[in-house]
Amino acid sequence: MPNWITLTEAARQLGVQAQTVYAYASRGNIAVMPDPHDPRKSLYRAEDVASLCRKKQVGRKREALAAGTIFGAEPCIYSSITTFSKGRPYYRGRDSIAMAQSATLEDVATLLWNARADVTFEAADVRLHGDERGRECAFTSLAAIAARGHSTLGRTDTALHVEAGRLVAIIAHAFGARSEPSANPTPPPLHERLALGWGQGREGAELIRRAMVLVADHEITSSAFAARITASTGASLPGCLLTGLATLSGPLHGDASGRVRAVFDDVGRLGAEPVVAHHLQSAIPIPGFGHHLYPDGDPRADALLEVLDPPAELASFIEKVVALTGLKPNIDVALATLAAQLKLPRDASFALFATARCVGLLAHCIEQLRVGKVIRPRGRYTGPALEDAGAPTSAEENAKTPDAATLDKNRLFKSVAR
Image 1 (spheres, rainbow, N blue to C red):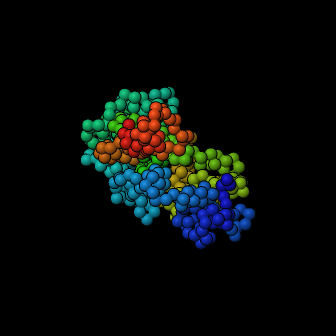
Image 2 (image 1 turned 90 degrees about the vertical axis):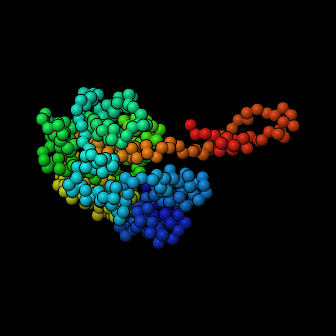
């Protein structure tokens, strides 16, 4: 299937008029870009059109609704942590974009965790695995703690907040944060520790602070859902966080900035014009532009990019993509731009995202614990026919024995989820 299709083809697949396709595109349900061969026309992302076709085919039967709550757009988790209103994310009712002006990650943790006391990320006696700081150190260190972690069941929120703060500090230090010896018992803010570890001054620390506040949480993402599933089983807090971070590490989620960084590498070698032209002429979507939740632009990216002064070639690249595609940069572009401007370590954009998102993931874990139920969706079997358990010995037994289909149906609805 091609990556981009014409208006006529999109309307044919959806079985609608062209005006309806325009409406889908304006609401952000279908990504759109100018036709590189005819600027008077537009092309539509085939994957988005196919997704809408699947949703239209799904009825409102009980089974379809259950599947939609996991794979579609139906809300399935009640949460008081983060929501969206008028194109902006809110942390427990507070505008996260406004908070980024001055709040620290510690402030956000205090808010999202519903903590009674100010949260600190204590770094005393941090034990890390591996000689080099980075992603491998973060995951192996957290896995070692998870292997001997204590269940979350029967523990107060206060105790969990202390452990959660220590876990965030461990992840940050695994990615390179460090502290200078001090007589002050309260550790410095986490953004200052990361800035120190990455050789940044006050200006760099301020940009890191802003970025971390902006990405601390984003409602029920796939990583938050994964972490909540683990938390619902009573697993240890580091185990829950490890599950969330493993999901976050995918290139279609928290590591999307790595795809942007690869394009930035091309821009550095070849220049903005050839890179943009190559993607458009090849109908290859440019990573980091457009966001299905923000058809009018990602406000987190705007809040970060407005205070950045990136290299001229990267700034030119972003401007050209926006002008030619109509798609605005999302937070992945902003994080990659920040890392490029400050000349941070190659994996720093993911490090920032992962460290900050630990706060949100842990908030979801703690909230899920208070639900008191295991998250256990049911499957719908689509495999080959089941083998007979045994043939009846007589016509009388056959008359008394339900057929295989009835047995299978009874097993399906009466079995207990393990």
